[in-house]
Image (cartoon, rainbow over all chains, first blue to last red; front, side, top):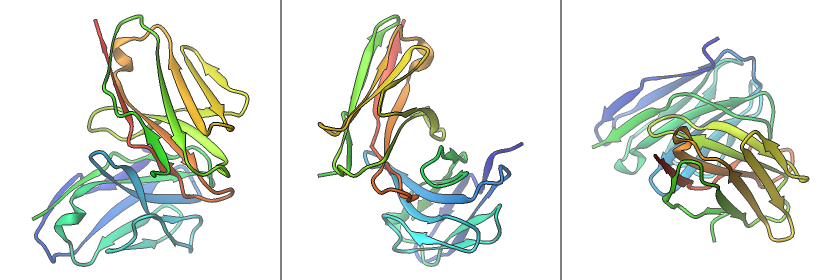
Length: 112
Length: 111
């Protein structure tokens, strides 16, 4: 039982490049989330998926897209990376809304 | 005003001390509350949920004050292993996945 896994762990991009962050959970959870964490800001919700087939914007969705591929997988895509997207990205899942969220180990992204 | 505010600290305390953190939230309709713990360069992990009547888990006690819109975390008999950043988490809307995190309070427990 791996919990929530994320790939890659680290990534360096140049401005304008695109990439997809992958997330998978093996807990049969309905809800999945993408957050970014910046110094002094706390975690901010980018997008979430309350159930398979649905996605909704969070607090800071601009510059990102998501796909809930199936119940297990939820990916985050940066179409044209900007230096302001340098951050640590966490994926999380929960059985349903308002319940405990379980986080992946994070992806450290640097955009030059 | 931020939706969830915490004193960033750092709180530096000796082993065995009692330490308390507060967290204020702006939305009076907020429904669920949590404390998470985050170690340096690691992912957040749930420490405890916060119930209206208050709750205790070993050395940790969480309280909710709806009238003043804050939650608190009390750690008794601090251990070196309690050194971490403690994140306050609030769900501002009923039946919604949109959790709001505070920026965290850093605690260092010294020998």
